Image (cartoon, rainbow, N blue to C red; front, top):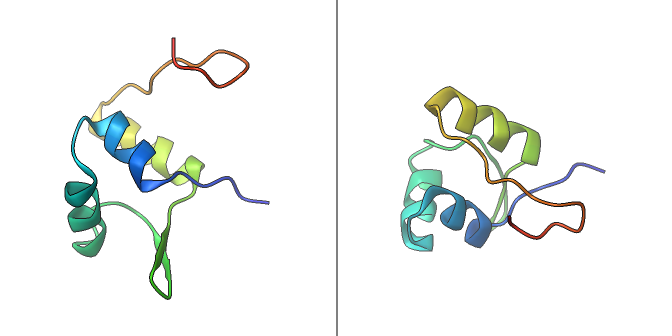
Length: 67
């Protein structure tokens, strides 16, 4: 199963609001697949996209809590 990232998580990692993330998705600035009303973004595609922007991902511990 492919791991995906949610819009609230994307907004938090980018430091922007959820509306901005939805606008970026609509404008195809963020790699995604559309399924009906859902925007699906794989975690791998998200991580790769962030790395192309030079944005470092937040560190997480084993239980998924931000450090």
